[in-house]
Image (cartoon, rainbow, N blue to C red; front, side, top):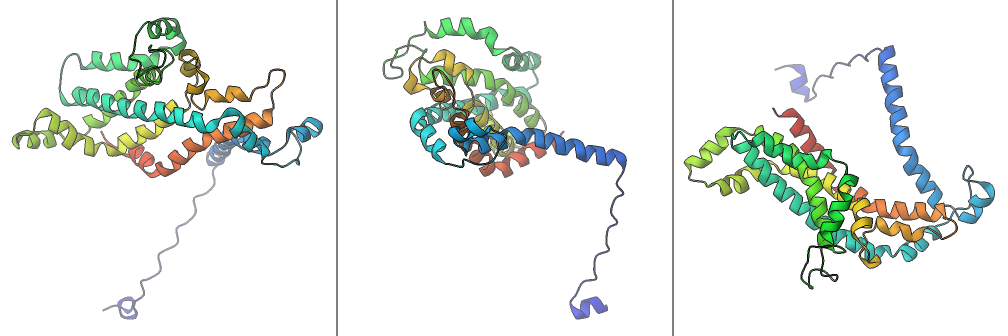
Length: 302
């Protein structure tokens, strides 16, 4: 029995020598720090501007300190009616994300599970929506939405235009391709022995999808859900095009209510922007572990 065992103390771990600072490593750290500052500067500037009064900055300029106040947040909340518009964003974002992940996982399972000659064509069709600029489809989609009828209980306008369903469908259409691409590559890395064992046990295709594949794809689904919530929640273009009733606008479009007729209070707009960004930040930090886990597992497979 050794001395370390008798005394109950493990021998100290050897000290690791520090890696020498090479010029390339210094340049890399300087570059990463510059990129981080470049990304954080607009956010920090918006927060700083939102905490200052317009009267003070109009006299002393924005490159100054002083005029601290929280009134901009209270005024922005009342003027833009963020409470109502946040609910509108929830009505649009939650169904759109769930439908996107459900449909994308179904298509990805077919592409990854079955070896068909049309797999590549099918994947290309679903990813084509991400390759086209959205502005190129503006006129045909607008005309289509103004001609597709809906029951009165689904839309006040009795059309796909000016309804939550229109925004849900257009977001699903544009986001589904990216999710299919990610999930199909993730599912192709799963061992095929799992499906062979499931077939021996008499599992149908649906059970192979729902009870075998989907539980294994939870990290990838969590990462995609985090991204999709952020993208669909922050979507601004289609809401302003396919909506006409102000009470139905999502929270990002309601920022237009903070613009004045003759001038714009940038302090007030900054406060509204910070309020709009808070829900996505909360969701990201809550799902951060699953998000990072999904990205790392997807990168290590295959």
